[in-house]
Image (cartoon, rainbow, N blue to C red; front, top):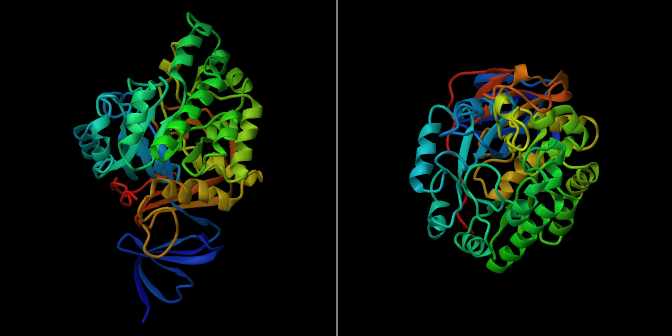
Length: 443
């Protein structure tokens, strides 16, 4: 008797943990049921994947969707729409909103806001502060929580854990992996005189220099080892940090962004001005080269977009009054697939960095691979499609991209979230039905 499925993706090149090859994928009740030559089958829906690659759903573990309080820049609906259009099937949203996500009530509010508005699955970080440190162990276990986020240096919003005593207390309270923004606050304040009163945006990587990042990362690793707490160092941008992190991979995992792997100073500041401003900064070629070396040798665990949209009118303010941050969730897949096309990255490594890696680092339940019993999340891509990235394509409320005009080969053509097709050829389909990302229990 023919098997029955809700959905079959037929005739595509499927990327599984063991192989890359042609296979059909059968889906029932939102889960992957069968992989291989399905022969005769019955299906409510058949997706013709001939000539396309079926990848595990891409997971972006660092986005800022700005809701509540900053929704003129972005909100959960527009940010998750951008994710779906870019082939991303799940996101982790950051806590520096207004009010910040530092309590159970604030987390529950975000979960309510996401219901029937998020196009992809979503989880929310809780921000660490001196005021909530004793509650972090309970907060990180709540449904919908992606874990604890620590800001060691002032970046955006009012969340900051700058002193060593509080940082040690945060690390000692909880068991899930903490995500950390590493910049040394004392050095940032001391060096602000380099740009105070106005300067060219080219000074941004001089103010927030490599030593600023290295000092914070070194302190984090020392305290993490002392408290036996696993940490995840976000948007690593320097050769100095990579050299240090290589000796601490047992306790610290590593993220890099497409921006730091692709853009380079000073040219990017020449071309984009304050649109290139982000924290930590876009740096010189030697740092970018070191990031790629870390990708090649396996030190980097995942890619995060650090999607942090601001309106152009805000970015047009004179530096350093201009805010740091740029959109990225929608462009993550084409930018990184273009690196695959150029031979800088293998397709298997891309999948590890964007699906298996995030699932492994954060102990995500049921996501990160194409395997029986896992969520039917798929990023379907055409590796031969060549298109220009333009602001007209960007769904984010900010309406611009630092990759404007870039020709990228390798594009997302369909996005499936738990068996539901939410994007096809640049169009959103159906209604937003994203749900909370699930996690394994603390080990």
